[in-house]
Length: 353
Image (cartoon, rainbow, N blue to C red; front, side):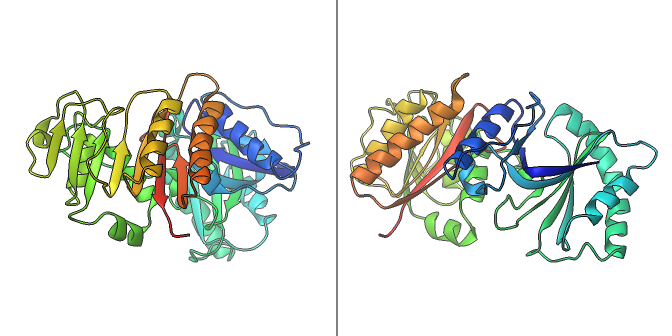
């Protein structure tokens, strides 16, 4: 069993983005003070990364590529197939306090899918033992206990703060594909709405009778999410709208270039999922916002194959600089969502000064 020093953090991420998640976390830590700890090796396509950050703190909400943020306490490898329970309980015994819930987790990979049946069988054994020891109590405000199996012969054990982490197991907010929606992209907007807004905000910001513009709308997956909430949508795209969105009474389809379209009057919402360079999309969003053409935006930034963190920081930094120069009060959050691929989704909303 390896007890960790200095402080190490376990980050879950989309497969293939391990280096990006680690790079981003290190950059945030460096803004506090220099990171001098030797960094663990990054395992490509593993669905997770570990970073060593001395006594640095990380903010889950500021980490775009990180699905879940866990303070890592122990690594056990190799883990005996004959008795996995005892060494895990011994490691947890060295951790302070009690835990509000137990999450057994696996990577979001093909290997992880194979491991999930094992964790389902192992969960009640570990949970029963921890309850008997008084270490596991049903308290949503207490730290969560994470037992993460990258494979059957290794386990990473850590804890998370409910106020500084994802609220769902593995950090994944899954959506189901509605039969009536014209494309699977509809799940990206559905997830964004659930992740970026709490229930009161969804009620307040997505009201029946509001007006929205969907740039790059075809075939209508994002438009579908809005009209389901009774919002009128101007769908701007040279392509065709499909299914129910082709003739929906709340949809006006304009065959125009989304980068050239200018609304006749301001709307409540702008949504945008166009395949273009992130800098170009960011400039477009900035123009809409500073011009007062919309109050709230959800948009996607398609990432390049290389230098993804740098391209993303440049695009978001350009928006922030422009809004700050114009004196616009706003809140902007970004996340690589579960239903995203080579992209990041951003929520931008005007706030009171």
